[in-house]
Length: 146
Image 1 (cartoon, helix red, strand yellow):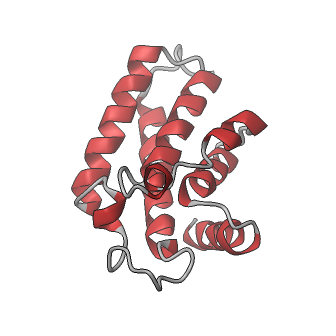
Image 2 (cartoon, rainbow, N blue to C red):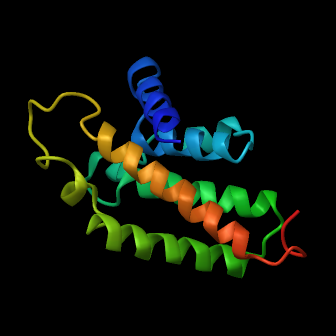
């Protein structure tokens, strides 16, 4: 899975010039074999640290959006989806020590930063998100999932 995610992140960053949230959406939903609607991708355009404001990490935002889509796709109730999102945020913060783009970004922000400085972190964060979702889906009762 690591090599696949590395290649996909590199493709979405370098070939498509997408932000971390958009890349996360693509890759997580590809993994779960769910098509992405154009409007969903449009909504993620500014989700890289809240449009560069250096707030919530775009990887987190992309995975949270993916969780909502995966849950809807499997007819999982909203309250379960909310719990899953909360659980992901908590575990991501425990694993990576923050949810903040400004804190997570290697070396913070500098005027001369190269593009897609967070490529390695994005790979790790997306892998973490996919594993989190997959493990949770294994735990839900059969009557909830399709």
